[in-house]
Length: 226
Image 1 (tube, rainbow, N blue to C red):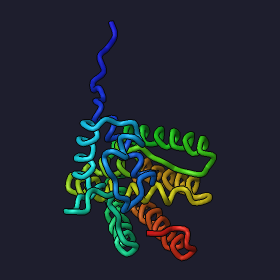
Image 2: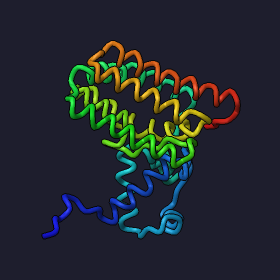
Image 3: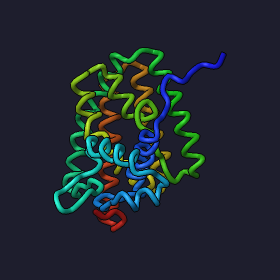
């Protein structure tokens, strides 16, 4: 007897997933004004599921609705983005330290397997991109939940998480950056597996600091605009 799936994606779920991925990958750019008719045609969506998806994206802080201006993709200034990365550096460093203390061996093994799947995706992209789906497929999401620090996870996985994902993907397309980031992820997991919280925190902070410096370099070279 065939098993019934635990959850079945509705049309609204599919529309939400489609649009969120488009925002994260920059197909719908930060600050871009969007309209329902255009989105329906562009992504082959129908009006009802689209409207529900837009509401969910707005609640996640990925869309902004302004009076007399309509709906647009959220955007941040250079200064705001760099501030977000400084905040991440501290908070995710703490999450990595506590993950080393609190994650189970099974969770760590699963995280290592996730990185193996990420490596295959990078190879499929010929080393040009490092896209991580949200939730358990996302390295940073796993570390935050693995910290067992409810308040910290709530802060890291709220609006901050979804906004940063937009820019993480854009920055992961730098030459050589996908393999470099994966290597940094593996070293963090090794420290967690060794239950070395101090090292895990140091490596995570250095990892995010490197990402922030990558942003600054791209801006200086004119390769990243806001």
